[in-house]
Structures are given as structure tokens and as C-alpha cells.
Image (tube, rainbow, N blue to C red; front, top):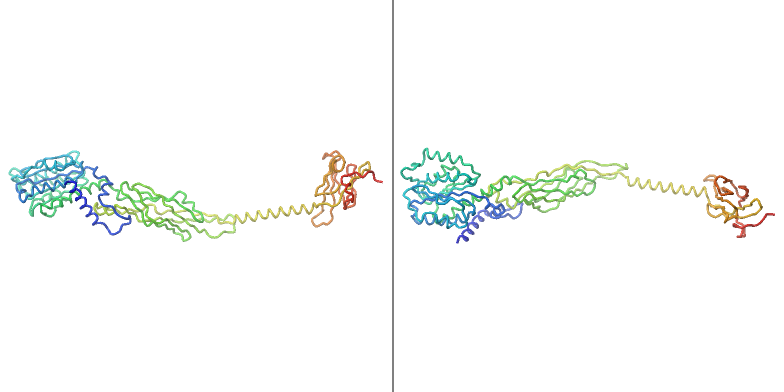
Amino acid sequence: MVRRTVAGVVAALTAVAVACLPATSVAGAPVDSDEVYAALDVNQLVADYVVLVDVSRSMRDGGRYEQTKRGLRTFLAALAPDDRVALVTFADSARVVHDGPAGRAPDQLVAKLPRTADGQHTDIGAAIETSLRLLGRKGAAPIATVLLLTDGRHDPPTGSAYPFEQGYSWNQLVRTARALRKTSLNAYAVPLTGSTGAPLLARVLPGARVLAPTSINRLGAQLEQPKAAARAAKARSVLGDDASHGVRVSWPADIGRIGAGRSRLEVRLTSTTTKIPLVVDRLVARSDRPEVRVSVPAGPVELPPGGTVTVPVTVDWDAGPRRVAPLARVTGSATLTLQGEVGSPWADVLTGELGAAFAPQMDGGSTRGALSAQRGSIVWWSLGAALMIVLAAAGWWGRGRRLHPVPAGAVRLRDAAGNVRDLALTGRRTAITADSTGLPGYGEVTARRPSLGASEVHLVIAYSRDGSAATREVGTCHPGETVELGGVGFTWRTTTPARSGLVGGVTGPSR
């Protein structure tokens, strides 16, 4: 029975929360209050409940006392086991019948109430005084709820400190109530008939709400309000100033080195909340320069409390055409802005049921980025320089080939003994060695033009009889002429002798 009743209470609270939800939410599908309270673990936060129950004889009429106990059973079953409950009965006097944890057995608490209501009077002043004493005790929870249930007007016995509905004692109650230090103090007066002294509670606790008179069989529904209010107070206590926090945008350090073309920036979104999950939707990236285009992927970004998500931001910068100067550089700056709508799946519960001012913002969404791009023609200049080097090398190579052509014919060599040898000229440099001519030492034969435009060619013959550089002699020989070097005569014959044996061969003494 208790389980079914609790389920009914939860369903009723959920229905109330859903009825207060707006049609749309930037954070997507909202969650109900039960999910929010579960995530905040409000049941771990202890609250005080002081329940003042009228046990005067009039409570017997219409079965009000039994109905009241049944309503309280439902009320107590919905409380967290660690919540502290003080049950105070009042009639001729006020008496605390229970002061301890709510526990998991509401029937045990209700059983501590008198079996029947038989009081002769209704001392509401004494009941309120007892509630203030319990609320002010050492170690009392900062969240408290006072619930007054009565069907009669204030009717104290002789000798009561509250003989009337006003006076010194009542003023003392007001001062005592003001001295209470509570994070949240809710008070509810529940009149069980049309005319009762329940409004006296609001005189002592100005924030107290006097619920509309109701039939006793609807008491359970009336008690939903203080339960929901106490749970909301717990949630607000757990949240603290979390609802005033939002999202911090952190741009990367290399924002000062944006180059031409496409760049990718890793921008971090960090939730500064500790309890509330956030969602950033409709992200838009902008730039204050038309040539700098910024974009960001579409779609919501979910941020758990205190979490960080990296969002890729693409920057496309058209730095302009290339410049003639080889090292020309274009620089500048642009303001980049990342904007979005920050919300939460909890938004409707926070602003509706909890009454929090929840309007999270994005901080640090704008930054100044430095632009720098090499727009000079260094590549073309490098290619041009390389081409000039190639052309110069080709010219130098051609010049060398022109000034040092391949000579034609052969050189006739005549040594001191009169031996004649013919050395065929091959290539641009022909070596004079013992193997090729039979002569001792070493020499070389090359051809040369005096200038690039000259047509005539002469031979440059260098010869050393012992092969050393110190004894080398160099001479110039024109076609048909003879030059003597190291005791050997060299004659340039522009036509090669007919006999192949003359090349490197010995023809014997000349006649």
C-alpha cells in the first residue's frame, strides 16, 4: 500500500512539473524533476520536518483524526529515510511524541500518535512554540518545514502562555522565529475545516502559507505541496550558485599564427557548472573581415558538469594574389567569434519548480587572431635563378667546347735519333705516353682557338722527357708546322696517314 501511494505521489509531482514545461527547449528533450533530484542526490541532504497535529476532541468529528493519520502516513512515506521528523501533538498542551529519522516504516511513526483525539482545548500557541524550539535546537538541519494540522480555532486552557491570539508571548514567538538561521524554512497551515486557527502560523512565520480549506479525504493531496517544496529546497541547497554558471570558450595558443588558405583551430568548450549538465546548440562562428571565413560543425554539443569538449573551427583566409617582390608578406588581424545558445535538459525544472534564474552564457567567445602569409614570388624567383645558372653553365660549357675543339689529323713525332712516329689525334686531349708513341716521359696535345669568333685552330703541345712538371715544355703548333720540345719534333699533319700502322708506330729513320 505504501509503495503504491509513493508511486502516486511521484506521478503527481511529475505531472505538475511537465505541465510547467515550455513548448521548446534549446537543450532538447527536458527531463522531469525526479531525474533532476536523483542526479543531485537530494535524499542525502537531511531536512527537518516538524508536524503539529491537533488531537482535540473535535478531531473525532467526521473521522477527521483517522483521515489525518492516513494522510500523514502517505506524507511520511515519501520522505527520505534520513530526514528528521518531529511529531508534536497539541490540545491542552504540546507534546513531542517522536523526534528522530523518518526511517523506512511510516506506520511506526504514525503509531506514536494517540489512538484517539480526546483533548479538551486547542493551544495552537504552545504548538508553535514547540516547533520553534525544535527548529532552533543544536545541530538542526538548515532546511526545515513546519506543518500545522488543525480543525479548530485557538482555544487554550487556563494557565496557557497564550491566552489570546496576540500579545507579549506571541511577539516573543515572532522574535524567536526571526532569529532562526535557516537556508530554507517553509511553513504550511492546513485548516481541516472552514474556520480554524491555522492562520496563526503565518503571524509567527510570515512566509507561511495557509492552504485552502479542504475536505479531510483530500488531505493527502494537500500535503503534496510541503513535500515538493522541501525537496525543491534541498535541490536549491545542493545547487548553490551553479545555475549562474555557464560555458567558457578557450581558443588555442596558435590563434596568433593563422596562415593563408585553410586552417583548423581546436576550440575548447568547458562547462563551469558542478552539477548541471549543459548543452550548446546552434553554434555559429564569425569573423569581422570578409576575406576571413569561419565555420563550425552543426549540431548540439553536450557538456557534462565541469566537462570539456573540443570543437573544430575552420578558418579560410584569402590572403590575395602573389606579389612581385620575392619575400613580400601580408599581415593583419581578425576578430573571431564563436556563439551558441546554452541550455540544459534541466532548464525547465530549474526555472519552474526550483525558481532558479537560469540563463547560462558563453564567456570568451571572441578573440583576436593574427594573420600572416608569404605572398612573394620566391618560388618563381628561385626557378628563374636556377634557370639562369643552367643557362650560364650551358654557355660556359659551350664556350669551352668552342675554344677547345676536337683536333683533326695526327702529330708526327721525330726524336733525336731520327725515328718518326705518327700519333693520331683522338678526342679533345691526346696523351703522349711510352705506350702510344714509344717516347719516354709524358705529354699532352690539345687544340685551341684564340677567340670564340676565330676560325683557325692551333695545337698546344706540352711534353716532358722525364714526365715531371719541372721539365715540361709547352709549344704552339699550327697546321703543317713543326715545334721542337724536349728534343722531339712535333709536326701537325691535318690529314691522318693512310697506313694505320703509323698510329703509335715507328717508321724508322727519315731519309
